[in-house]
Length: 234
Image 1 (cartoon, one colour):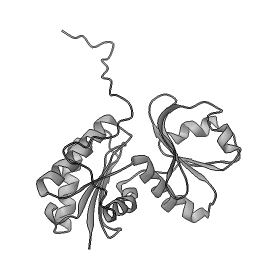
Image 2 (image 1 turned 30 degrees about the horizontal axis):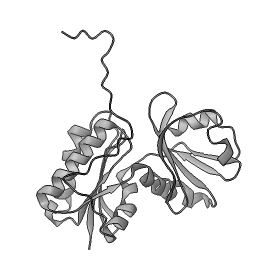
Image 3 (image 1 turned 90 degrees about the vertical axis):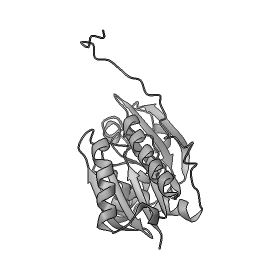
Image 4 (image 1 turned 180 degrees about the vertical axis):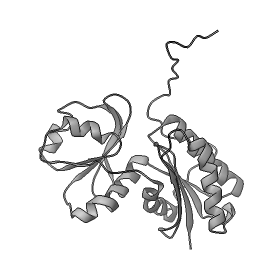
């Protein structure tokens, strides 16, 4: 039986899941702000101890590769790479936005029997900007990941043709802007490493491993450090 440890620190939620053949057997999560660096290693240790597992016994470690929080992504990816390098096991990388599509499908779409739609996951990226992409119902990307500033007519042409499902931490901005009967919103959606399980196992089956030495998160935008106006630098 294959076991994958899934790590997601791309958003405000620090999430770790252990899955065996796509079945979740252990889970730890916290939504406390800026807690990733403190809690991630603790969660991993707790899960491994709970399941009486050593890192070497895992089939792979999967990490949410972004886009998302710059600091969060660095914490998750560096931890995953360290585990894989030390235990000599494969590293899998799962797109954060694609994993979100699997999650919204499981939690909302299956219950509502929706068909003929397009996924539009959105992660908040300050002001009216979001990290987003478009996926078809088979979870295949049909519009590349971008950092997009939302306008009232941003998706007007697309919404004339097909229903679009908006969800994620950036979807609240879309709800306020878009007035269209083909726009579907799932504002209660919360991302989790649980959403990584199916795409991670698909990558494991196809041996779609990352190069541990050279793999980097998908930041999408460069990190820009800022200093508060009242901060005096000497």
